[in-house]
Length: 410
Image 1 (cartoon, rainbow, N blue to C red):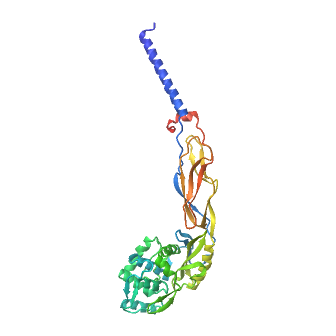
Image 2 (cartoon, one colour):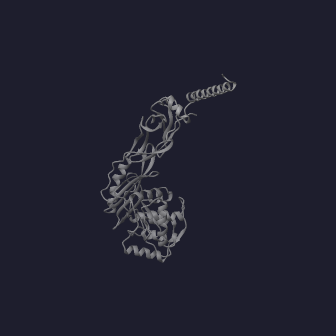
Image 3 (cartoon, rainbow, N blue to C red):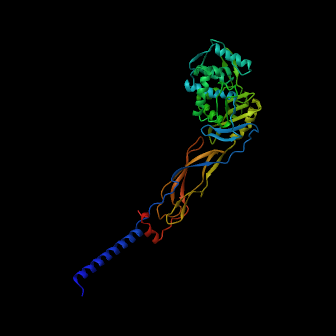
């Protein structure tokens, strides 16, 4: 006998089963009808460093060398890059340090410096040691700019120490400051020791650091002008010539020679070249030559070859895979360049390409645009960008996978 209570229990079970069935059907329907979440690549927005093939250059067999470009730093090095004496190239550090404390603009002479008995003593000492000098006398007055000329063009060792004394109170004070100063310039393998002229072998550096030093000098308009002078008229002395005998040869516009028994010949050069309609400044550094004449003569073929080592390089090839989307249900969708990304570059130069990849909706066909890769403008290139596209279409997950992964739905 079916009682009213049993009928009521039956209706309750039927309502519950019906409601559960509706919920299951609704869940299945939502899993099938709602779109899947957008896929994202792990690459996202990132920087991709791309290096071109190094140039085949006529490196000297001795010492160490390096090449670079103004605005791009060091491009390539040759040799051990172990700190070696740099002789009078150290005067570039002195010039930068003095101008850091007493800056000049083009056309300015700056403060007047009165030389004293100590400065005359420096002159006589360097004469006795057969160092390069500029004659001075106690009570002589020279402007800061004239002192820089006398230090960098005829390479007066005594002028370097006198200028350091004037700016920092003593050569010892200058040395202490200079060793902190070179670190601020990024010259991590450079040490200044004992004098401001580089006459002592305790001032050392590497060819790599000299390229960075040359960049700083050529970025200073006052020093750029001075190191490009073939001669200078020193007050009370007359015309004195630059030791850089190849200044003006093959586009060479400076920078500084060095020569001593311990250092041998050292030459840091800057030369101008026209590339793709734009003028760029190239830098070379040679250290440890048998003598200064060798450093200068061996720099010429290096400079000429460097100027000829520009080409239009393909940084990224059409179809080159640069990333991927991982489908949670299995399978990867590769991301590739839609075309060639090319730039005019010095061989061996590295470029930071900027890659920006946005999300990929499911479903999407192959060749769907998902971002771009670009290289910024440089000295002789405009900014260039090419699209990034998918190489495969997205696939659909199975019904079972969708039912088991509701979190993948929106």
